[in-house]
Image (cartoon, rainbow, N blue to C red):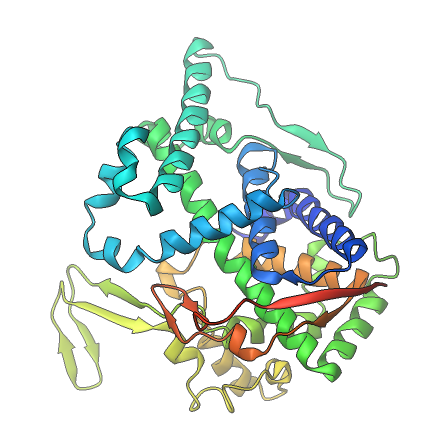
Length: 387
């Protein structure tokens, strides 16, 4: 997804950020600390559902749903290493009747969500067929974007896919449901975790926090009126903070296997035959001291280095989203959400860490995405004041 496509979804992104800020105000009134991972995960799930269907699931405003989804994700993540090698299990599970899912409790909520998506996608297919070849008018609704000058539309992803020029077999209800599942899975946990890392490190470093607030105060005079995303992209310290969060999170701890099916690969003195599986671990690259000086230190200023050659090397090795032709296609989507969320949270609120240290966020184990120690109770913060 290119940057222009992300700009067209700006209204959806900003609606999601506004929902998150409403939740922060509610938490402030209650005077309690909150688990960043749970709340930020709920924020991204609501965003992705708003993007897919034109309306959010409403997870963020429902504490029981927030807890349920967090627990569901944790249970499913624990099965990842096994499912990666037993590739037949997930396709079989998706076709199981609900009554049979007792044999695999961690998969049950995932399968139910998939079937829910299938039903909505099938309705879109049926509506298309019922139109007797006439183009369906999308259910998209025009949205007044009060955050900028761009007029935006947001609606049902399935209807947009059906109206697109993709191959007919890719418009089946099952394929479209799988696309929706990929958006939810890829966008929910990862983006929310990066926001958690960025928030923690900013709050832990007073000078970093003050510099971020000064930049945001100057760029956003009215805290309730965020500027367009393309302006947020020009804020040097905000983007340096996010880049450093992307790096130091070292989020993906699993190896990324790749295969060149037809040609040999050459690495130094080695010739790797075709069809040989090779892999890299993203976390090892992001924490390599030969590339990033003091890799365990949160240093956003490294991304503002005036040495262009050195800066180019840092950017080249920032592989949080992968690299090359297999780079995550949602990179601009994720960055748009992260810029908007960080700008809104730190322009509108003053936070403080609550009974939380770095051990509550740094990975010590993981199935695919790194996880903090199992003894950690989570990363908590409090809303100290509304700015």
